[in-house]
Length: 452
Ligand code: UD1
Ligand code: MG
Image 1: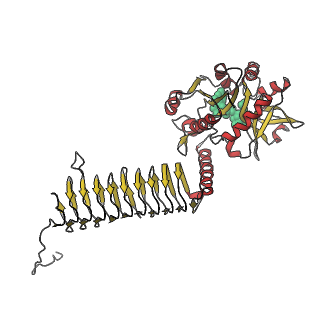
Image 2 (image 1 turned 90 degrees about the vertical axis):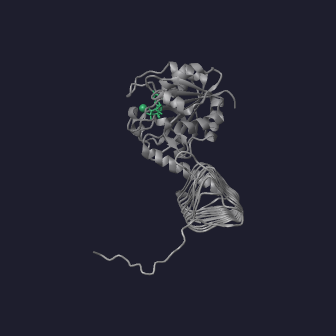
Image 3 (image 1 turned 180 degrees about the vertical axis):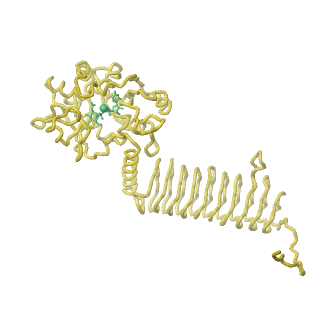
């Protein structure tokens, strides 16, 4: 379909959000409300017009998309008035698709149906049937054909019984839209220019109003406050989790899995409860993630085991590695094949070679660690002198005794051994044992102090 212009209404302040940000910039998953709508609109239209009002500069800056035509609605005089601001920017021989920046879960597939319907009749409306239609414009039908929309505040007691309501989303031939917009007036309970009044105008013009009825009420649900925002976040997350499970991901409990970004995975991956994935994360085959981990922008290979309570960001973890429990893998870290990072270990901007182990209570930063290195409990690379960061290099097969400090810049040679409890300030040669600690002495006649 070509020549589709989307008009996204985004002028509302959203006072009920109690936020300094405009409503349409509130976030759902990893995107703003407006951003979600823009993505779907882009999938079905050639041009997008956003009608903005409150916090316009903030909105434009945050969205930062030059392909959008930003149209200001300085005063909010109703949905019809909002569409009027965009209409002059749209050629008559197109279809205008009206969307709302605070209806974030709308799907392109539904919009396609609506546009197709409008292509044949000139005007099509997206409605939904609600158990509780309170507050919405009611769809008035006669012989099953739509005759008008009556706003809740303007409806009679009998009309209020109707459960089919207007979602507000519609597709209209632009020439017809312009004609009908000219005829709008403010003779209604709210004294506003109602977009919905174009329906009656079209009926009076002998047009048939095509309709698509949304099957999922959340797809057309608006967000006015933080409670509704959280509700739609859950809907979004469950929908996404269902997609991942359909593609073969095992989620122990989809209600306790959140992904704000994109997760890709191979076969037989399993994710336990309370996990948060952000940005772009990929898992190979047969990788498991235990409970309570937070993983962001990372590439994790095959047969990797991430144990409980790990925080991993911007890292690469190679096949067969094991991380955690309680490990923190910080940006620019590469954990090599079959390497093991144990509890209470923090690794930053470092490469850990194949088969190397850092099993307990360590800080490793700005380091290059070879293959089959064993780093004992409590080892610290002292990478920071208070001003600059320095490198630690550890050769293949080295053994670093527990509770040692490696004062960077420093190089530990291949197969070198560092005696436990050493403070290493100079390079340690290959193959040799280096240690730096006072000789142990025992005082035969020493007495413990006694209480005075
Ligand atoms: C509107 C519809 C109603 C429908 C409901 C669905 C009209 C007259 N009524 O009612 O039939 O059931 O949506 O949610 O259209 N906006 C502007 N500029 C304005 C006015 C509104 O940008 O001057 C934006 C708002 O920010 C909001 C949206 O349009 O995102 C809807 O406006 P709102 O006043 O909330 O319409 P409703 O009364 O909910
Ligand atoms: Mg209103």
